Length: 103
Image 1 (spheres, rainbow, N blue to C red):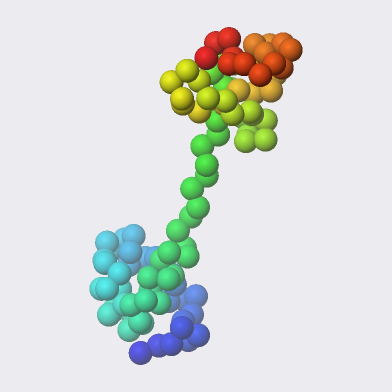
Image 2: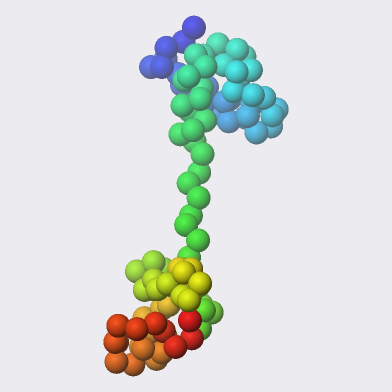
């Protein structure tokens, strides 16, 4: 059985191929490639593309913004709402400590 250091890029490609094209389980892949079960599991976890975090949408201007461009507030129903800074200035002209007008 191969050790963790002996695994080549080709093995990793085979792991991805067997997982996606053949639809094999992780245990089946480890038997086919003669690699330790835990190692295969590691490689599959490592090769999963990271999901992008959804960009918050401002309820006023309806645009998607990056996390740095928005300020989070809680509305009347205790839900998180993300306002972009431009819209927040419009509904909160003086920046007082109170709930937004449209919440």
